[in-house]
Amino acid sequence: MLPELHPGDAGALLFDWDGTLVDSQRANYVALAGALAEEGVQLGQDWFDARTGLSSAEMVRLLAREGGLTLRRPVEEIVADRDERFLRTAHEIRVHPEIEAVVSSFHGRLPMAVASGGARRVIEITLRHLPIRHRFGAVVTRDDVERGKPAPDIFLRAAKLIGVPPNRCTVYEDSDEGIAAAQAAGMAIIDVRPLTRRASGTSA
Image 1 (cartoon, one colour):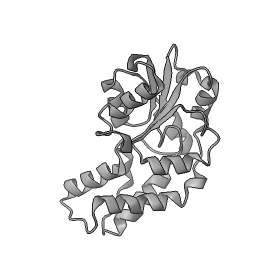
Image 2 (cartoon, one colour):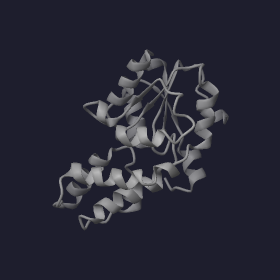
Image 3 (cartoon, helix red, strand yellow):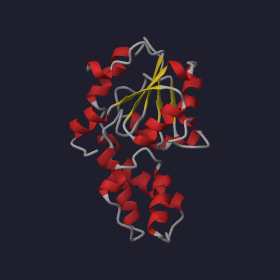
């Protein structure tokens, strides 16, 4: 395990999903871009990369609002389209090896949870293909809370489910929204972007 990823004296570890645990940035972009193309909307890679802490629904709403766009389908249908496109490639998604080393090192030693702004169905189906699937005491998604990141709800719920006070949790994150959410929850943060984005060739 890389020393910069060591959580110190943390009482529990919470992991964001997309871009943190798994190298899914490109697959997520392609899926959402494809769904939006059906609306005649072009999704810029840079715009997407700068907002990866948001859920797909929140991204679609923000894009429409910023561009003054009228969408043909409801946001929920666009997101469902995006999810189906992504799931066609779910078996190709891989764990970031740097983060997998952390999970392996602390499995059985510290409680761990996934805390993601993604959809539960997508995460659970993708997780089935990965060797880390049994190592988490809880999986919390955008579907489980009232507010997504940058609100702290996802992280606070994950901490509650694994029975660890928020101030004893360390969060692994790769987005500004996720970091803001962890800060609002009163948790320690390890920003994985210098490692995972360099390794996957994704620009910040």
